[in-house]
Length: 438
Ligand code: TRP
Ligand code: SF4
Image 1 (cartoon, rainbow, N blue to C red):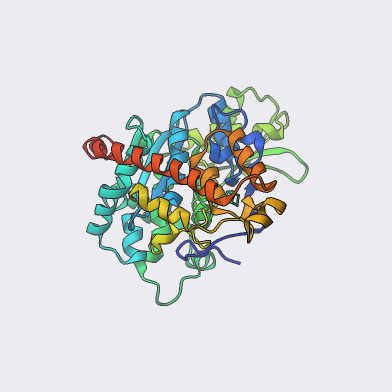
Image 2 (cartoon, rainbow, N blue to C red):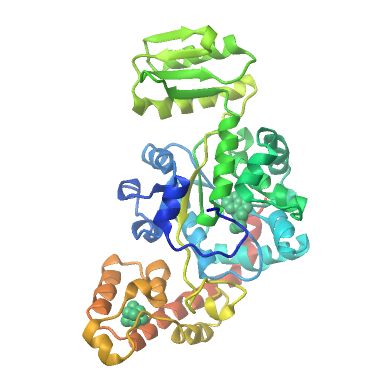
């Protein structure tokens, strides 16, 4: 099985995806003690992650960390697109530096839009909606891939550590794939890693919140980050923690530096074996590895390295479309667009595929199935903040006390409110846009 970031596949079996690609489960202890955890985290919509514990730790210890995510500016923004930005806004509220890439080069290379068109999508549609949804300008930078020299430079330079066979194995490009498309994963790697350059805040944990279709890009950027490290901290066969120098230049200096850093971190029992380019730390435990690695990474720029920490990722489920298939801009009846007239949205909801039984009587007797209901999904993902109220909807649906007609009406009311509010906030959003753009 392969994940193709450019196909319109819907993924159903998230547990299987996790197992197959080594994505970790997003368990309760990762979010439960975060400040006012967001509903998408609380409710299992975010179902998987890579290295989120780095982010958790940064939040808990009040250390700097960053969010980087990207948007493919193509067409209109719908509720499915809203999820990422909801997450970003939450993370902004708990202290992250925010970076948002407008993937105009990718959209140009893979969707056939001109750069001018993608620019207009971003400026007329996506960014105003982001602002209306509550994104703040402080510590927030939105940029276009095609205009960001550092991102493009990194794409070229970092590509050195990945070869064509690896690209083929990850993406399955064919002979007719165009080169801009083929190059776009490296631009995305540039997006993801540039925030750790000194002038953008330096080496620090970075979280990329995305849909699971983006996992191939995450694996690529994580591999590339790792490949550029000068040090490697691992457990040896005989269970010792070791620091290894990965490169062949400056070995002595790098070992000296590691020794100094480890002493500073209060490790005392160091055994240096220069021939192995290694230092074994006999008084370190497994739990210390992360910290040691981070501290060493911070010193790597002194030796010509980048010191990139591997970027973390979270993966969220996709919203089902109102028609039961994928929510997609190309099928307007499947999606609620943030710019839909409220009445239009109500119409779509009234036609939506629910988990209701075939007749009212059946439903009273056996209940509905909220797990298979897109109206319930609207509540869960977007419309209801209070977990108790959501639970109540779930229960009353299952037990047959709740009927789809009224339930849809309630969902429509809440949706109309949401859209009306956005309409209002979008009016002033465009004037504020300059504060976000770099
Ligand atoms: N490829 C992403 C998409 O299809 C957009 C994107 C570009 C992105 N750069 C990114 C996402 C960096 C996350 C991080 O939607
Ligand atoms: Fe869905 Fe509501 Fe009908 Fe239950 S009652 S199946 S939640 S629309």
